[in-house]
Length: 74
Image (tube, rainbow, N blue to C red):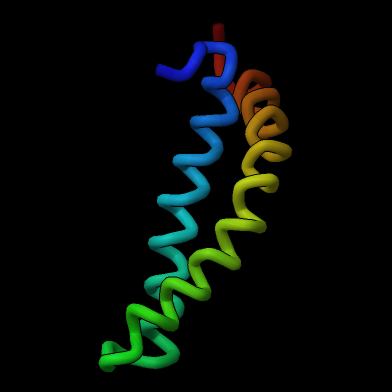
């Protein structure tokens, strides 16, 4: 098991992977359609987008938590 201190990083890794998979899949489908080459094209686009999404989530998540904390009542 992974130590609890790595929870924020693991959360960002999983979240960015799932979100980038969905968004890149939809975008690839809209541009290319569901042809025989779709899985290969989608995988390439997904890996590139995940490489950008993961560090972005690690930077944006703490900022988002602070904004949400300001917007909700205790």
